[in-house]
Length: 458
Ligand code: SAH
Ligand code: SF4
Ligand code: F3S
Image (cartoon, rainbow, N blue to C red):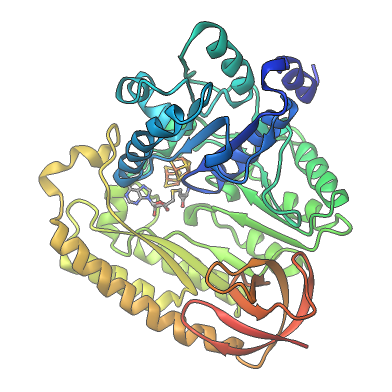
């Protein structure tokens, strides 16, 4: 059966909910944000409409993350506050889904019995059915271990009219020792290229100008598919197919894995006009010793070779990275290696995290080697200072240059200003005069900071 038909057939409209309001509260990464758009889509098929905030909602879905311990703490804190929300109006329904729900299962309702439905990451398309069942039979938990229906065909209510997420792959087959994602998102499964291209075309017809391809290892996309009789990475070919779509102006992707970076992919980024000039290379640590304990599949030298390869092909590329500070056993010398690689790589932006032990991962059992909070905090600040310095210098290369800016939204801090991104992905501020959200405008960069650029309309 066609997947969308199958998903629609699961949704039995419940007259008692038609006209009611829903709200989806999202924690975590882009995968969750995109899943939330799908959940919204299914709620709308069910006859509900979106509330402007949870205060006005009859049905509230909390989409959870569990990547670090504080994500778990935040969830149970939030659920504590939502007990009050439920009691403020009759017949309110509270649903909890996402990665923490997948991990904690029954525990969610044990800790917060006022939750009506607990649903995992693999059965999202059952959400309306579960809501109906909970109305008829009382609260319930449904967590399954393997995906049944890819949620990618479910309808979606996008947060932005002009930018869209496109899932190309779900799950992860790596086994980084710090990471809980494989246990809550399952095995890597690639979507068929034709499905992806068709979705992208449909989005363009709806007015989308920019897509971001999503997966945990996008550059190994396709290794589980047999295309032309061969199982092999297919990422650059996918980029080529997407680049040919008329009206699609920007293609981004996240997250690739450094070990799977091939020159072929970087050549495609360079050659394909609509693929943005930005590459994410999550370093995690610059120490070969720690990288080996993390099971990352590369060492310090190999990582530097990748950076060299990327910069040789595209000298002005914007590089970004993820780094974990304080992995078990990290010595001052190991940390110094991280600082060295950061200094060498000249990233535009680094997402930094303090190591957080996740139950069920190998690193969780390295308790004897855990690093004290004081040391982690000190290293974190040193890394932050170094990177702020590098970003400040790096961003100066844009000063007085002309760029194309996609206007995304009103700035949270200043309602007179729009924020958007230039091709390299850098956040850019511009005055609202004569422009609207969704425009791609020619601008000149007139000022820079370590965190964003300031532009004027040309
Ligand atoms: N698939 C992506 C990462 C997904 S998780 C990749 O391989 O790059 C996003 C980031 O969260 C990771 O890159 C890592 O830096 C951080 N992270 C994951 N688990 C963590 C943990 N236990 N403690 C601290 N940071 C963690
Ligand atoms: Fe986690 Fe590693 Fe998979 Fe990324 S590649 S999701 S860090 S296990
Ligand atoms: Fe994303 Fe958090 Fe899950 S980072 S994959 S929502 S654990």
